[in-house]
Image (cartoon, rainbow, N blue to C red; front, side):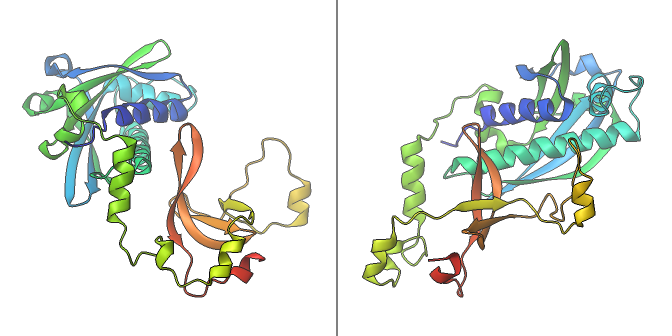
Length: 291
């Protein structure tokens, strides 16, 4: 059966809101929507496309006025007055929140190594303000109640049929979770004999095995920037230094200070990790890394 991504999504939903809004966040309940509660309210509809393997799935996020106004207020640090109605500024804030939620969800799923869900990616296609009565015509629509300290705020999501097998815990179905051993076996089975990961087929001198236990310093470079000495001398606690690296660009993998590949940051059991996207090249030599 399909891997169940429900808990991963709920975790990333609450974690991302906590990071962006600086409030303790938790998904308290998930249930099918009673649309009558929002018939007289406005909602922000954000359409998100998820792609993995040969599947393309469309999710529609609906953020009611009570949640949307609070989200923007908290993103601004709780400064000013809490708005009563949705406007373009609130829509932009909600769009950023949803984009971050979906991006974190994709990163977390990809780090799990599921055999049936790989290279998951998302893109927010559109965000519009609609009347709440639009919810009455939707199927597979669920309300997530989010606790933000003392507040209980709803986030409504409409799933298409393609993704339902992968969120069976949310929809109330049952799913067989792939064990870690099975995932590892599946990944190994997919490695082609000609893959550079298969070291038994690499044309290396036998004596090279003597160096296998040599320790090398691995580091990951977030970004670089050339600065003037006078700027460095003026820095103080709280100073923000803007790097040249864009947030969507891969991170550089360095061994003994030499770049050998690129990757993306992931979270592994509460710690930072790195998923390798590119490694080595035809000109790569061991003497380049100080051996």
